[in-house]
Length: 385
Image (cartoon, rainbow, N blue to C red; front, side, top):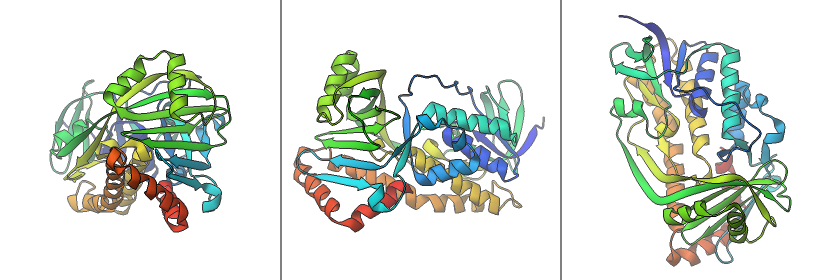
C-alpha cells in the first residue's frame, strides 16, 4: 500500500525539530512532522527548563516568525556574565565591551515550544501528525515507508531524526553512538532574589561542581547546579527554605536572600558522540546528533545550527533526491567542526574544573583570559554563534 509522499518527514517536534520543519516548509518543500504529544499551553508558573538563546539562534527564530510570538516580559537579555573560580580566578564577559547589544537571551522551554507550534499551525506549509506514534519504518529507494499507529502511511525521500538523545531514528538507521556519563546531575530550580540581577549571569566553578545563575524577568533567576549525583539527591531532598539558603551560600550571597519559586528537579549529565549523523535517506539534528555538557549552555544552539545548515543544504539541492547520501554528507561536513569544537571545549572544561589538583590551573587560566581582550572577545564570539 502506498502512502502520502513527502520530500522530508521529520520525527520529533521539539524545539529543533519544529524549527527545522517550519524553515523547510517555508522553502516550498513537501514536509510532514510527526510528534507523539502536542506541547502543553504555557502557564504563569516559571518553567524550570530554560535556555540561553544565542543571538545567531535568535535571528533564525525571528526569520521563522516564532520569536515575535514570545511574551517580551518573559524574555531576559544577558548583558554580562561573571565567571568565578574557587580562589581568585575570574572572568567578566560584557556585551557593551564587546560592542554587541546582548550576549544571549534567556527563554523558557515551554514558551518557546508553544511559539514554534503556533507558527507551524499558522503557516500551514507543514503537514502535522500529532498525536501520532510510529509503528514501523521500512527503508527503501527512493522512499522510506513510515506507518503510524492510526494507520496512516507516509513515504519520504528523507527522514530527519529530531527525536532527542534516545533517538529511535538513530537506532533504526544504525548510526552508532557512544554515551559518556559524567556521574553528575543538573539540578534546576527558579528563585526570586532580594537584589536585582541587572541582566547578569553568574557562574561559579568549584571542586567537582559548576553552579550557574541565569537571569529571568524582574528579580527572578534560574539555577543550574551541575554536581555529583549523590549531592543532587541531597539538594532535591531539602525543603524550600533550606534549598534557598544552600544556593544563596554557594553563590556567595550575590543576589541577597533567595525564595524558591519552583520545586527543584534534576537530570543526568552525559556526553553523546555520534559517529555519523547521516545515512542514505536519513539525517539527524539536535540531541539526536550530539550531546554536550550544559556548562556552556550551547546544546539547543547547536541544534538550531543543525537545522539552519540542513535547510540551507536541502534548499540548494531541491531538484535532486533529498535522501541522496552525497547531498546529506554536505550537511554533515558543515556541522562536524562546530559540534566537535563545542564537545571538546565543554568536555575539556568539565575535566579541568572537576579535580582539586587543577585548582591553581583553572584559577590562573581565568585570570589570564580576563586580562587578554582578544581571548575574551573570542569567548564572546563563541557564545554568540
